[in-house]
Amino acid sequence: MRSAVLIAVMSAVTIALRALPFIVFKRQTPPWVANLGRVLPPAIIGMLVVYCLKDVSLSARPFGLPEAAAVACVAGVQALKRNSLLSILAGTALYMTLIQLAL
Image (cartoon, rainbow, N blue to C red; front, side, top):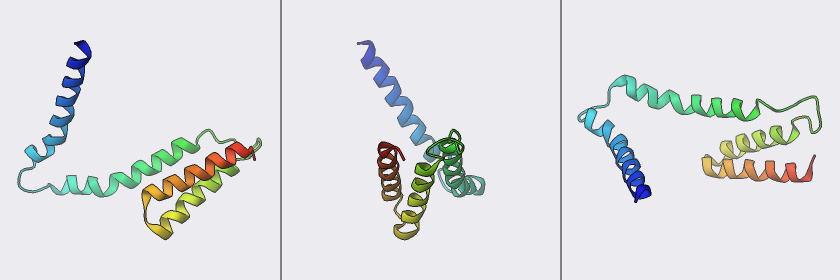
């Protein structure tokens, strides 16, 4: 019973948060919100890259080579195919393969 109440409350909050922008901005999106929509995705991706690479040791084996190869793979696939999902999957597959080979 308690779990059902928690799920119902979480569902209601999620629906309310997703509906809130449509309720608040009924007619037109303000320019500052449109600007945030333009600049936030690249900023968030940049922060994620920094977070993922922050613990890479360049002074110990494998000297950051799997991470560098995976970043290059993601950038290359994204430049060629313009498909974020494919880029992330390719980079992740390459990284996991290189880690398993213990380069």
